[in-house]
Length: 184
Image 1 (cartoon, rainbow, N blue to C red):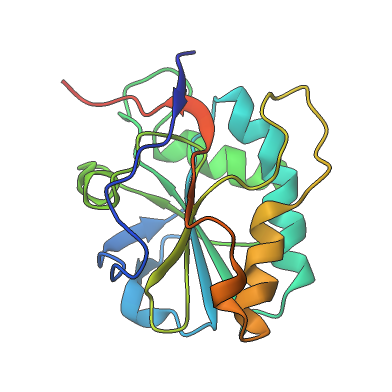
Image 2: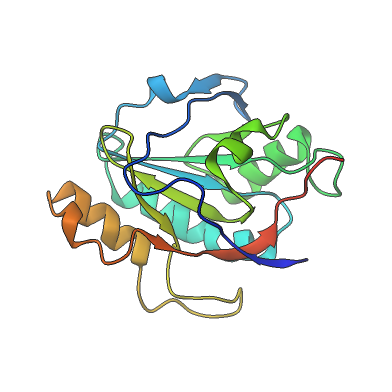
């Protein structure tokens, strides 16, 4: 595990890069298929302790909001040959955690590069126009064993839904996690 902070490639106001990726449900997903008022794209994986610590928060967040208000998309861009990764392990992960949002594989790692994702989890929050409004932490728990006291992402989603996007304090607040395992 290499502890890595997210870095900023997309800046606030940037349009979400498009994608066409296969989900663990064998359906293909693209950006144009998503019509929610907010979109949270999170680069995750199967083995990272930071992801495992935050996955319950993501599931809970998706449950709290109507799908018309929030759609979470999990994208796995790790090298499929890395231990515990690959599509079959993604299917097992989705079943084990009862994911209530699409979990997609980025086999070429192009989508991670387009977004500038470097760690897991690496969350990107977009508004209804699919413009980046926040890139950063899900909550204030920085280590897998820490407990969250502030639900940063959930608060920012609510601000967008309430028409108060300008009250988001920071548009970039680096997430911390395991480095994405890049193909050679």
